[in-house]
Amino acid sequence: MRQQVCDLCLLDVMIPRLSGIAVHQEFGRMDCEPFPVVFVTALPRDRGADVPADAVINKPFEPSYLVNVIRSFIG
Image (cartoon, rainbow, N blue to C red):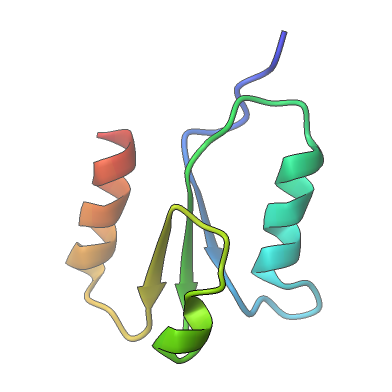
């Protein structure tokens, strides 16, 4: 039986020493139920389009926008 790990994961694309994208790839190796992944990034919008996520939020952003995106996935 697959285990539920979390309801949602919020990652920054450019985490020091290990990219958020690499963390996301590790999730794919886990035997768990799928969950939404939301990335925040300071990358230009055209480069952020390559991020494998359910949503990508470009910095800077309003905190209320982030809350709305999260609520859209987990209610």
